Image 1: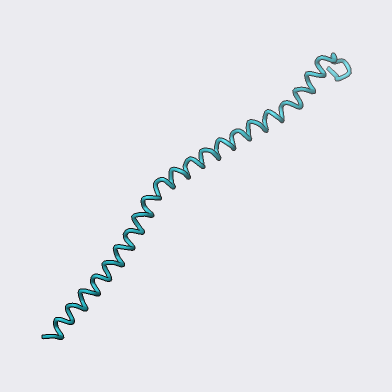
Image 2: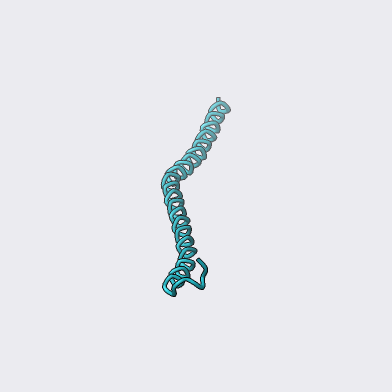
Length: 86
């Protein structure tokens, strides 16, 4: 069946389908990519919620270590002063 023997309605239908098929395929791929991007963003947000308390803990540990070193140094100075005085 050649194009010259097709009715006008069928030709219009064929042309419409030839335009709609790539548009539908592109839309499906775009939707899939957007869904993946949204999922990735949700995972990143969950990771940040998990990481925030860990960062606060790490900062606290660094402060604790600094204070501990200061206390140890002060204690050693005090002990050496006591030894020197006797």
